[in-house]
Length: 247
Image (cartoon, rainbow, N blue to C red; front, side, top):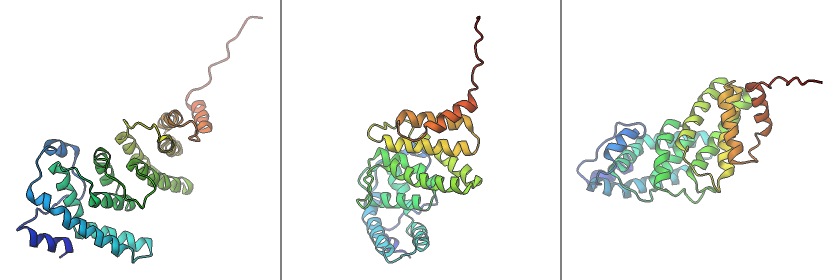
């Protein structure tokens, strides 16, 4: 039995066990968003916070990235962190939540993009603070940086299946942040749309590539897409025939 489960067993007679492996759907959230937090949900946080601190301390003992990834994956399952996050989300609670923040970061590290994109709107809406060890204070920027690196890897290696998967994930992320005000975050916004344009150009999805390149240029004039934009415009929009004029 995990540390958090032992602690909860002493504190309450029973704790609901989640069968969800991912964040709840938007529809489920909409129906229960205003539900008041019950005593169990309010009392759970200290135990899960203690568990996450214990796991973070344990992670410091590893030096190998793959060992850290394995530990994170096992800890998420062992302590039912996603179950707790589901209950937190559905209860309507809203407070600075280190468990939510670190589990979200681990999900990004583990490239569990479905769960990441389900939870990202919550992170933004509640303005959850990123841990101070990270330079960025902006959750979309944190996710964009990770996807940008992955996409560049697939582009450099010409891995088409990887490009297809990352292209789909980028489109989903763009949908999540479609109403984002990029003022002050022009570099981040341009980065998102420019890498999406490159990925779709590599897949010969030229219409999407052109749209994303235009968006990148509109958000940040220094997004580095001007040459690609001209190439795509020539490929998609054939030059009009020269007008013949009378001598």
